[in-house]
Amino acid sequence: MSCCQSVLLKTMPIVLLAGLATACSSFEPWVQPYEREILADPVMSFAREPSIENHFSHVYEVREGSHGAGTSVGGGCGCN
Amino acid sequence: MVPARVLVEVVVVIKLLNKMKLLTHLTFISGFLISSVQLSYAAVLADDRADIMTHYYSGGGVTAQGPALLVRKGNDKSYSVFAGYYVDNVTSASIDVEAQASEYTEKRDEVSLGVDYLYNDTITTLSYNTSEESDYLSDSVNIDMSQEFFGGMTTFNIGYSTSSDTVKRSDNDFNKDLNRYRYRLGLSQILTKNWITSFNYEAIAEKGFLNNPYRSARVLGAYVPEVYPSTRTSEAYSLRSLTYFDWRGSIRFDYRFFTDTWGIQSDTFEIGLNKYLGDKNIFEISYRLYSQNKASFYSDNFDAEMVYMARDKELSTFSDTTLKAKYTYHMFENDSGFFSKGTFTTSVSYIEFEYDDFTHYKTGEKYSYTAWVAQILLSLWY
Image: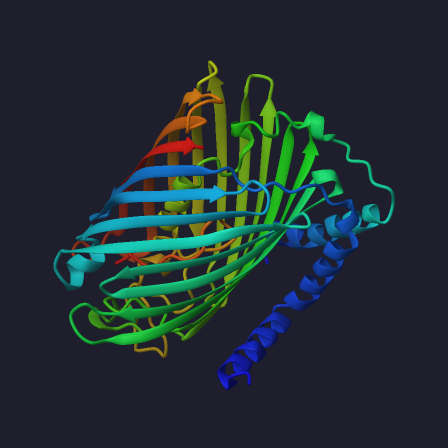
């Protein structure tokens, strides 16, 4: 297991537990809905053009030995 | 009466979840979802939108191009349906084809249908994909659930896909099955007014014919049929970060780690920069680096016959780098007329593949090639 994987595996439960602890108290979001104008900007989207993202996912999935944790599901081969 | 086949599949899935310690995680997260419902924030369905795209790939003797269409329409309150159509027109004279056969052309059609359903601040997505080409058929069903918490600061996603594929050869009646099961978990978190991050995990279990039926292994220089294990389990973890800066742009970092039961491990890094120029133009440049080690049963040229043998370059030790440039032009935005907004996007990418232990069948030198990828996209909101 690599260093990065180990860090990710250790970090996720802590984030979840922190979230659960917060859920049990009265929660106030530290970024209010009216403060999220920037977050709604097109340049703040992980997948602004889903069609282009899906095409890239297919290009890489048929040429690399790895897949998953990305944007695409389903798909076929087209790969020889 | 529940069919025996369904019961067997349920038992297999539960065993797999236990094996991967996923059941504990899923139970925990389910409890977390339930405990936090009272803090949820109104979820929003995706915009009504149509994407019309043409795509192009050329590299390593392969050219694939065609149109793609994605349309989405909902009622703004409870549902949004979507449909997609994607075509690959492939002409291939890749090194694998050159070594064993002659150039061929084929067409792949993919159709996707789905619906997003909004109920009590939870978005449930049910979708179906089918892909067909002369020697490969694939059908998959996907279900995903998304829930916002803590005033919309946190979003959880959970998903499952199952696909049933048929692997064929176009020159004879070869026909084998391949089944694939995908389990997804995701968490995205608003950190500040201008910083968002997300974590995704996916486990994939595959069972069936996992080879490419046209490719061969080499034993002491002689070509023999490849033999792959009939199962493969893989896990992928990704972490993404996107930050806005006052110079009207953003910087994105992505990292993915992948590991599987075939001994492959890979790392993918990507950094991207988005920048407004005026109010209507967005430029993006990004750099992606991918590297993997070989599968345990891969060899460019085996010394002796083994139980499992592969000489598929996708299972070798290699790396690839991508440099991408993308430009988006906001054509119009108005409140009257059928279309409320329109954008035009074009993207061009250059990819280099370099193989450490896959050699050219003629020269014996390490193989490498370059590829170009391009898309032209018209998006219309209504």
